[in-house]
Length: 397
Ligand SMILES: *Cc1c(COP(=O)(O)O)cnc(C)c1O
Image (cartoon, rainbow, N blue to C red; front, side, top):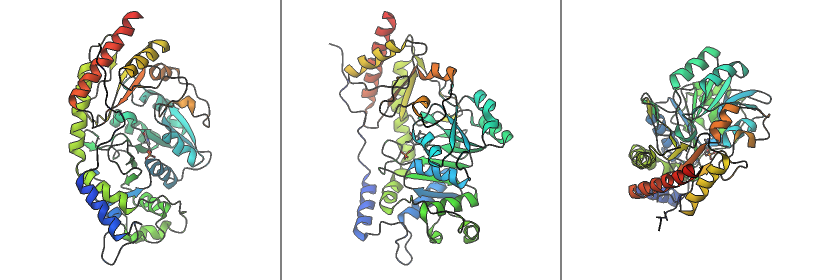
């Protein structure tokens, strides 16, 4: 009898006690709207912004309704509008091109390299096509950020970082989201902190911060923010910035604050699981492990490997055989988008673009979520199952 994994790939941990207590306090006083505070009270949302800004070393922070909203707000704050082109990753998830489409702009896709980061050669080649890059640190892989910033700075491209998978990660010790002009994070259940839905926006640029706060729907209550520029900056933008409501509320902020305090400990737990799986997959014939650069501090909340140059049938067979043994793998090479694994050619509202070198890599990317509810023994078992099934199919082919 071959072993079978019986755990769940989508089960989250319970929220920490401190988060539950903080939520109860908000429920008891009833002031859920972020600007609904009593005399002298600092609202949970404002405190969350102040603490997150300090945590990543940013001057300004705004909490919003979702990660996708933070990204669209970043584009709007930069003045990106209908017909503008925005560079972005071909290998990413649907909310990324979606944020570009939401402002009427057009995504120009940049390829993916074998280390699953943005292809910097392709970026350099396309640098004259847009003035903004929406850089997605897809699945937590950071590219050579020094090179990327050199390319973008010399071409006059403004970088927005999509850090949905890199909250808690760093490049050469600098928090992810702090190399570009704006960093955007998601607090959605499947990311690194969990408020169901939610997003965070950080920048050091006072004018962008003021615009983002006005955009999110601050009315004229921006003085209740604790990680915002001074009123004189708002004076410059407040009459010309529309209100596109997307605020965070105090209940979500309350449950996020204790989780952010625990983030480093959670990252260590994720990485212990990731490293267990990675060690179990290493040296499997036909399977390529994605090596992590030394400058990168990553968060192993998911793991990817490549079945490079395998036939579609053989990859599908591995996915099927692993599923039969309780291991849920996702494949980015499938013809049809399934679950979250859509590809650049599934986003048909965007102009059709051809990226043959990336197609080869996408066709081999296998992806797996690593929930903290897995034990280290679960991780070792999952790796054994994947390794065995990859070897069976590889030997047959
Ligand atoms: C989840 C996600 C987002 C957006 O987050 P939401 O909070 O769900 O809007 C952006 N980019 C990537 C790569 C994501 O996975």
